[in-house]
Figure 1 (tube, helix red, strand yellow):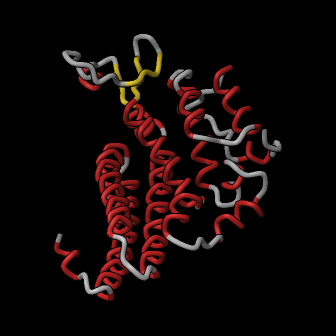
Figure 2 (cartoon, rainbow, N blue to C red; figure 1 turned 90 degrees about the horizontal axis):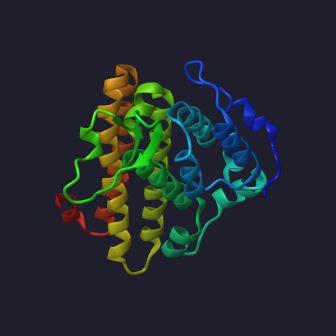
Figure 3 (cartoon, rainbow, N blue to C red; figure 1 turned 180 degrees about the horizontal axis):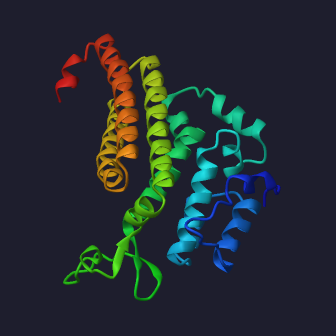
Length: 256
């Protein structure tokens, strides 16, 4: 159990459209104040909520993730410990991949993204349910009673939707750049390390394409912002990645 820090409520208490969290949402707020956050137990909590409760809880979570001043509270006892971990330099690529807080952020974001696309709101039963890929069963997305949670968040809380995915983009870009630096220092190039970086790039592009479509539905303003930030990140990565491959004499990889 971590130390309670009540300033968390300063950016985690804004209700959506007049909705106010009931017992489930209050329990969620209590838990993120008292326990180390983790996507596994948080997503299980989400499954117990109604849609309005989930939207409020999602805004609370994103408020924590997106606050540079308070982000340490997610899974650390104090800001000093978090900053120390952020500044840590690991001896090699594999240690960075196993132990860095940067990679931990990506893992957490991946789990939240998976939850948003695999879970739906059942309007008839007022429940959040997981999509089941069973044979001979109609996909939930084709049934009018179901709304994908990613769609629900995008429509009901576009700012929280946009903020989460921008945070995800930034973490992927950060990890890619740092991994390139570790690879550059290797005496012998490990192709598996380079493939990891390329997979991060593919993931960032996939998420961008999906989210751009969603934000266009909700708001042209967010769509333009997302496109701007993605293009900025992509240009930086392309420049660094291209220079890196040229120095290694691997320019042909750029054509793959």
